[in-house]
Image: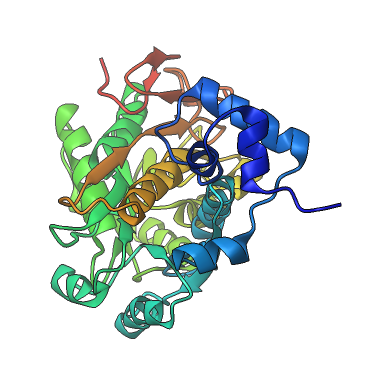
Length: 366
């Protein structure tokens, strides 16, 4: 049986080859009706893109790079999975790279593009300054993820960390918590991510008329893991720290916090309500299960690839900075509703500026 071609699909659907190509590549400016019509023809005929032929015809590899600092971290592993699914739906494959959160690692990933293997790249840098990142791009389409300042002409996708932290702390405040700590303040070079989350934490305390006691900022090492966070909170509690609520920089820190609090005989959420960040899958299986700030990873991947493919299609305009949404994934460690202490877990998530069960995510508390 001969191979089904792009032309076969176009003739079967009664459209141009360009329209079929746009659907196969996931080009966003195709009407839903036309996309459905072409997809039906693709499914009926069993068409599969000829990647080798397309590469020879266009000079592109149909491969996109994805570079993260540390693939051992569950959030980056789960985000890579989302990117892979979105890229595949648009006719691309991913090459995954780890920078090790080092300057040399980030330079190496940026320079590897010269091998011609990748058409473009999505990257979350943590070390190189904006000026050097700009100098290393050399015309290759790159979309940066995360909060670190990037070159003016670069495309960037992130969540609003300040707003998300305010939402999380606001939930604890509405639950009656008044001694709210932040776990994850790095002891050496503070990341931009931590700066923004601490800023949101402080603003939420100010909104509630609460003082930002420096003792409530519990430090850990740069890029510390769950064990490091556990040891940091354990030391603070041993030294006499009193708190009834805790926002953690990430879910690994929150998992460590659960162990430290249990060791000190403190009930979660009865004595201390805990909120993590990233909503990793493991958080649903901790004891208690973990309430967490959940970035919209699907939207993050889709918008990043939108920007990247527009660059590949010829867009040469100024850099676009896109903010995607977030929710609070409510579980047992800080359940939804106004009565957290001694309360019953309530699942689900609240997004946007909507109010549900006395908690708000992605907006400002009423």
